[in-house]
Image 1: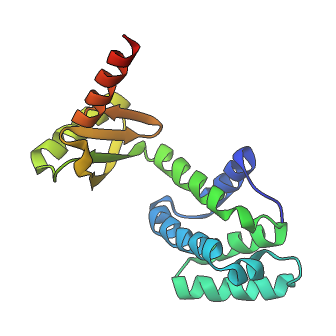
Image 2: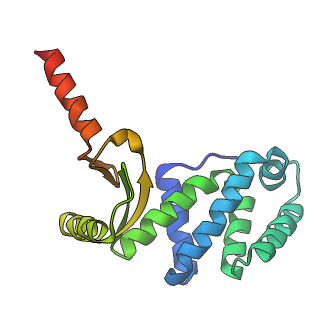
Length: 181
């Protein structure tokens, strides 16, 4: 089994996206993430799908059964079989991350996480979405989390960029300035 990272994973992700209807991608990705989670948690399952000690036909059978139970389209089954035969199914997690990233890019969307000390009212959520859309130039899908340790304000992460407007974050900056002198 070969690890799949970076450009190789992106290549497989692009191949996958060329096979499926773009509007089905979020649902398929969700189901593939379930497969990835199972592979991470269940050693026997992972071995059945990735070990060369199992014949291709056996792995194809398991993948077929899995796809049927998860309701995955035929194209996805063929793609998983291809990855299995290529010996790179172990890298499915990385490939799925690229599939999701390429999907968001194609749809001109970004995902983000907004963390606040308390539940935010809808009008504030809408203002955050509008502000991030203006900053990124893309539609924004946000996930909201609550962390009382922030004391107040919000922390927003979009892609690799973090905007920390929390009281906890500001106190940390103040502490650092005081320590430096």
